[in-house]
Image: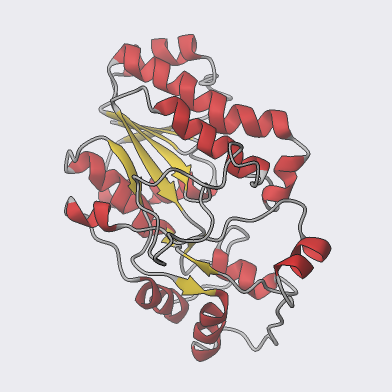
Length: 289
């Protein structure tokens, strides 16, 4: 049996769907049922239920976007840095292995040679560089806190998307935003992310940090061209002149735009569809609300 924390969220629902389709027993634990932010309460529950694995998909991203984290810093810090430590404490005491949904948004840009950041590269979009959004800073803190534990997977998600229209879906955002920022990014197909992360446990790959992104990178303009080619929308896409214009007129917090190297994941036998191919497939099967 698998326990999911944060199962009602965008990522948590993808795990639930996958487990239902595969006939895997799971419990999506709601805070209304048990305050899992209290390590003592969570420990009692884990000892009673004896799960084989736990997934933490809980966290604070802000709605409609990370700008909201700038005005609710206490909730953001708790959800992304304090809570993971409390879960880790309970899981360590109960000897329950687990996985933590982190974020690739703790990086900006790419490596000096233009390649994507690996799991060995120190994050460069954090409080330590004083250049990040509050959200990215807290996600980086969460990873630092978990570094002392040896029974956890840290899974880095980046800009989730799939074929289902949703305010959290990157494709939906491109379709709805009035103006777009040209940038280059690694992105993660939501359902492939859920499958790849759980495969870490199924295959018993070494604990540690994994970039869970579709191989390759993609620009905003390339995404727009794929949307046009798929005839998903007749929208007249418009772009900001530059990042300074974007920050001045449409954003509060600086954004992470970065590329990640997912070869570590591939090296343990877990593959994801190349990014352009995966976006094309999602658009081909696009389901509007």
